[in-house]
Figure 1: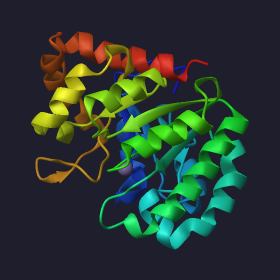
Figure 2: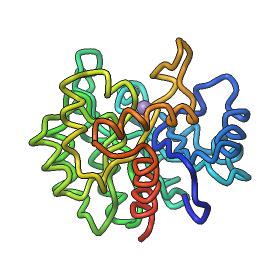
Figure 3: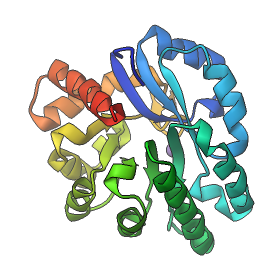
Figure 4: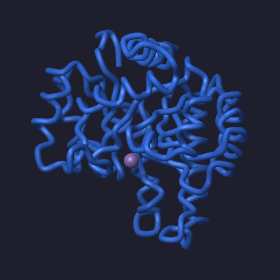
Length: 251
Ligand code: MN
């Protein structure tokens, strides 16, 4: 997301699920929010790339979301074909929650192909979903994506402190959203994450702000709270997030 120096970071937002996708891209540029537009299917890649092509702050990630694998597992072939065009990958990962557990074996097969392709290509940055499957996601990363072949950002991480330590040892970053900071157990984990691995996200439109879907510029509202949790001034936190993104994207 260089060479511009952004003011804010939204490392995970589904821009294409909003009715005003083009307006949101303009908003990201106007508010200087470096935004990773994640996709749930590789069929959305082309349109996202077209819309973001002139944006200074929006980058697009090539995804195949674990929650759609039940219906879309065959799209892994299209995902693989498009991978050479992508630097960012996501949303990908595993979801062992009750609604998606039926497809868990297929999810694992798809995620293994994603990680193997990324490792072979090198230089990709992944935003990873790990609902009720943190241990398995980390196991897959450990065996299939060596840290020097790609970088992983754990999105909306809900694992334990021990799992967070294991992820950090594997080189993972963590993108934190405002909703995570509402839950005491998750606050404790966020408070213990390495400062140099923290990033911010909205996961919009799946989170809310003032009763409407969060927009990337809303990350500014969570920074004071995240800063207080970490015991640093808000401006220090804002700069740390920008520096962390820079470190993540610098080969
Ligand atoms: Mn998401």
